[in-house]
Length: 254
Image (cartoon, rainbow, N blue to C red; front, side, top):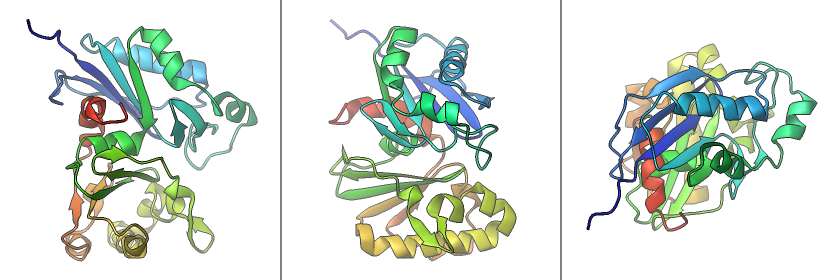
């Protein structure tokens, strides 16, 4: 007797857009990804509605995975940098949204909303699930609106660190130092050099066996910068953010 099909609804929530697809157990997409702009100001009720509306346009699934920016513990938002703002990243923070999002139990809310098992993690952690080999210390950094990070040791997901909020220089955090705003301001060449410098600084901190660079802006890294990163650094496609939605169910923590 064969096991019933386990398709996964995978939703990747970013500062600028929310995208989703449905995948089979091997991580193969069963539908073309759908992307909608992240609506602002984003109340928790509007967030749930946005995910429901997105899921309604996709094939039926038996479980779901949601990736969110920020510190997520056991499916609960501790902090999230973008969704508490008036009109998106770098805009004014609204106290009423801070109150809504802090300690918001996304996992319980989404299980109730679409009546199926759900995993909710930091978006970089799900991205990592789509690319790791499961051997040694593997660090995942995602370059997008800000900087996402995830650590895996022997395929086991480590507790999340908000590396993005660590100070770098000039009073800037990693989020602001190598985030999308600075890429646009500096241009790809200078921004790529900043990313390379950041990796040099982080290398003796993590002493990784392999570093994966992903996220939407990884493709903006210049060839000369990529060449200097080293053989232990791998550039991975942004599609891993969705593929990981299925593979994360196979991780020991899940």
